[in-house]
Every structure is written in structure tokens, then in C-alpha cells.
Amino acid sequence: MSDRAPHTLAVAYPSAVPRRMTGMVELDLAEAAHSRLPRPSKVSAVLEAMFAEVGGVAMRAGLTDVLATGARAWLLLRTARVFFGNQGWFTAPCGVCQQPFDLSVDLASVPKSAPGAAFPVITVKTSLGPRRFEVPNGRTEAALAQQADLRVLAAVTGLAPDAGSEADQFTSEDLIAIETALDDATPDVAEEITSSCPACGGDLALRLDPLDFAFPKPERIDRDVYLLARTYGWDEPTILAMPTSRRRRHAQMIASTGGPKR
Image: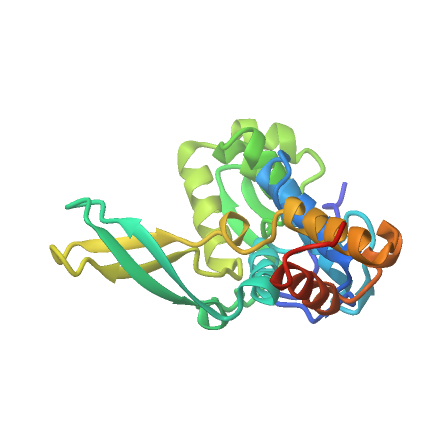
């Protein structure tokens, strides 16, 4: 029996067309980013809310799950920049001396690696013979979020018809070789910003996760809706259909004059 076809979209960093940013789109993004979903599901929901098209394909349920992990991270950074901007400052304690330090981050310049030559499929020599694997995608992230194990990685990414059972037969050396080959072939975006502590000179590493800092909370959008509804008498669908920038301007004007009049 032949290998199954890979699911991973064969574009490392695909083009993407964002949706028109209205209050409803922003609310969908905010609710996805601040939900209690596992992180892989959060990322998928954010990207589905943000983009109308990815890689020349109209957005549909499950499309973001077949993007390579690096493509998902890259599109998440692109989404974050809509709300956070390109640059910002972060404060964190040094892991050596515990003194707080400030670090400037440019989201537009986060390094990303090129895909391997055979992307999105690689061949690895194992104790069972040569076996083919597809680079990790959103489905892989979801499986590993439930159980972070190299056998799970081999089972999910394996293209053999019986990849699941073969994963149980691989030796430890096989699993390490598979993981290393997948890492080398997978396009990736840097998740850490490194620097040195100004107080003690120790090495610093700040993990960069846009879900932790970049997206508005649903409560902020709800407040805007409340202010505009009380002041102008508009209903919620009308307010959420407005471009985000216009809604914010109205909310700021109302707040600057002391809020809605009774």
C-alpha cells in the first residue's frame, strides 16, 4: 500500500489576504486570543478570524491546521502587528540576578528560517527502512499539546499507511533522527529574543508569544459598543459593522467629553 498524501500546505510562508477590520472581526479575534482553548486551537481560530484567504485559497474551517508550524507562527505575528504595531518594549526579571530589564522587540524583524529542500516531505533512514514524513503543521501541534512525545510526533507526521503502529516500533535513535530531520526541514520563526542583562551581564531570553500581549480583550470592545449605543442610540450590529478605527475614534471622543449624557 502506498504512502498517504501529505496534508501540509506546500508553501513555507504563504501569501494571505486579511479581512476588512470591523468590530465584529476584531471581536472574533479577541475572543479567540483570550479563550480557554489549547494554544494550537487558539492560533487556528485567530488566523481564521483574521484572514479571508491564505496561499491563494479562500479561508475555510481546517485550512490553518494544514499550514506548517512556521507559517502559522509567521501569520500570527503578522496579525499581532495590526494591534501591537511593529515595535514595543517588554519588561521581565533577569533569570540570574532577578533584576528587571527592558527589551525592545521589533515584530517586523523577527528572524525566520528557510524550509528544507524537500519541504514539505522528508525521507529518514530508520531501523524499519526509509520512511517519509511531512513537516509538522497545526494538526501536529494539536496532537503534541495533548501528549508531547516523540512517538506521537512520528505517528502524526508519518506518511506510511500504518504510521501509528510503526511509531511504536521505532528505536530511540530512530525517533531522534526523525525529530532532527523534521526540525531541519521545517520553516520556523524565532520564538525567543536574546540579549544580556545590563545589571549582571547574564544571558537573557524572552519568549515571544503574541497571544500573551498583542490582542485586545473582548471587554474593551464591549465598552466601546456600550458607549456608542448609549450616546448615539445605535444597535450592536451597526456598531460592530463599523471599521475598527472609526469605532475607536467615536469611543475616544465620547470618553474625552465625560461619557454619554443622561
